[in-house]
Length: 316
Image (tube, rainbow, N blue to C red; front, side, top):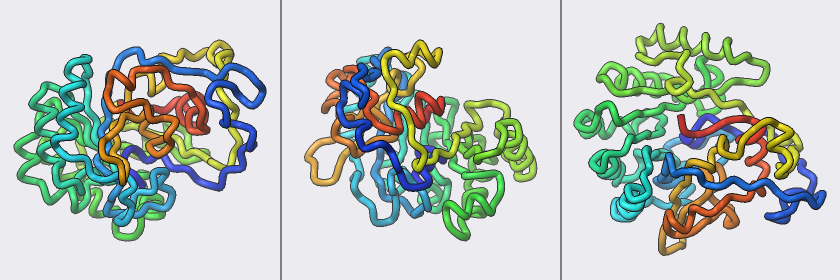
């Protein structure tokens, strides 16, 4: 699974083929909901889709062979860090794939910290990260958070997703981060039928048993994502839905974040609207953060499934 989050898509989609066709109008002819950028709070940089794991239901299909999103370079990342400074961005998030597969990962973290950003790195905490123990120790501090994906508080569920012999290595990486004073966060899954309280209690027991300095009651320290069923049909979100659902467009992830991706075969990185939809060209907003500040039309099932109805966000 991609370490953006433990969000996974299960099943085979059986959506009404008339849905999500027109970017501006739903299948019923109603104005499609759109989300304006209120502020660029978090800029995500996708470091590339290559990963040391090939998880069962990774929505971005990261694996040791998938380079659909190629490694972004330090120079390319720095250009966007400079733009982010100009627009007042607070946080830089690094995701993948596995970010520590990218050979420029440490210099990119250093460059973001050096510009005064808060930095969030999403990782599986396995061998790619552990190659950089000494370099990471030099970068640790209050502005760097390392969020490790643990698919569940039980080894069996985690390894059913990530493969055999992945649990102990991930726990060892978490323990190293915690023992060395890093700001450690965990991203996990709330399984179908499992209450939020039960999920947090399960992780709390794990943290206590392993000696991990993570507060399971803090939603920023333990980020729990629902598992999404792609076989379930979802409604299109219209402008009228905001009032019906009692939600504000400003609460949706794309109101405060964008993601930089570099697609294989393309000369330059581009800015995508969403961390969850890096390949769909309709969600490519431009080559600069200024160009990418335009509103996002919610013309994808993930917009409804994950963000509007699921209430989830990849940033803390």
